[in-house]
Length: 68
Image (cartoon, rainbow, N blue to C red):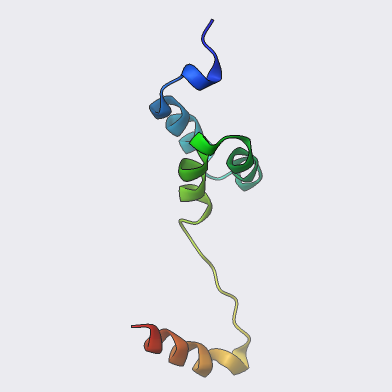
């Protein structure tokens, strides 16, 4: 029998790819194995949403422009 650590990384990547919308499981995977960290993190942070209070939009835009 093959242990989990003997499976090629490509198989783990494919498994994690199928979990791309299950954030709770992906977060658990990042804590389970260092080998899974990069692949799971890719899906966890592929989209970042910033909620801004209406009064602070000008400050946010200024901050973004300063970062360029």
